[in-house]
Length: 113
Ligand code: AMP
Ligand code: ZN
Image (cartoon, rainbow, N blue to C red; front, top):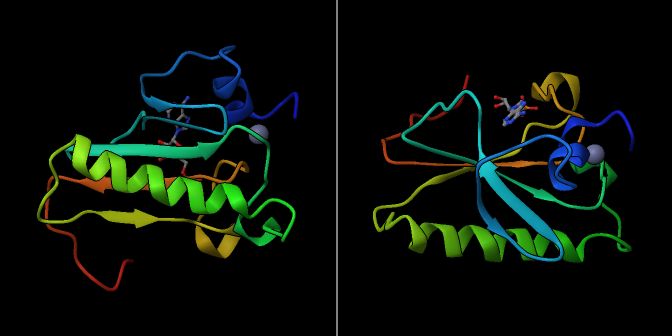
């Protein structure tokens, strides 16, 4: 998608601080971190939101969670971390390219606001 900022980050048009990359996914630091570690994990392929996951594109979601487990070890988060997806307007999604917030380094409350 030509006007999607996360597609532009995925193809290098917009810079980011990468913490993990392979052929399918990219993980980079969030610009406005809400925790000591706040990384966004995205599929390189444009998927608008969680609501657009289908049998044709869902393999990358499993891979994203493999990457999350890798990041947990990479950052030494032995006491846990939080993974968040905001889906659509009511979910609070502001960037319309599927992403998972990987956050750690502090204790989180529940339920989330
Ligand atoms: P969401 O509200 O779930 O759609 O989250 C979008 C996230 O993207 C927010 O946490 C923003 O801080 C983050 N964000 C927006 N633009 C950038 C950017 N250029 N680089 C890194 N993070 C960004
Ligand atoms: Zn996109």
